[in-house]
Length: 160
Image (tube, rainbow, N blue to C red; front, side, top):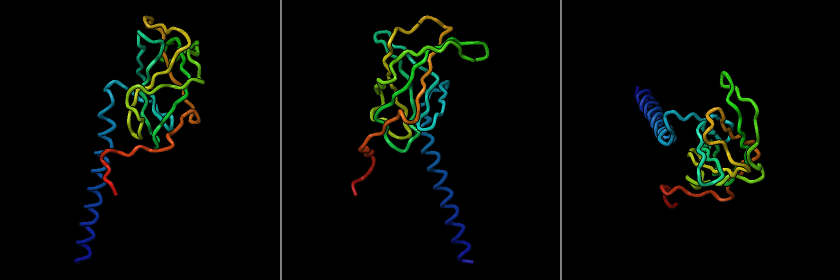
């Protein structure tokens, strides 16, 4: 009888810890996301459907979520401009950047696991800012994501 009671305590304690860790982990990532912002999962990263075109620079800024277990140090990607078609289908894709020039992290440095950072990608030509029929997308291959050689420790970690 005593072992059954101890087993119930252990199961309830374990389930409580699992629920608590799930709530804390999901709350951290959700706190950074906008309500209308949707992230497309492409494996190691998730790319936001929203982007910004700064007026002073010839760049485009995407919000990227790190799904990997390591800190991202560099991302090389392809920025395309396309015409919005009927039913959400794009047509006439035009490459706007040099894929050999990587993005620059402008907010959220270092890009640690589970966090969202803003990455700026330089464009080869001026984007069409006022045209509502044009949209932009970022394509990133998993081999175009590079990780930090040395991981940054969290501030909350205590010394061993």
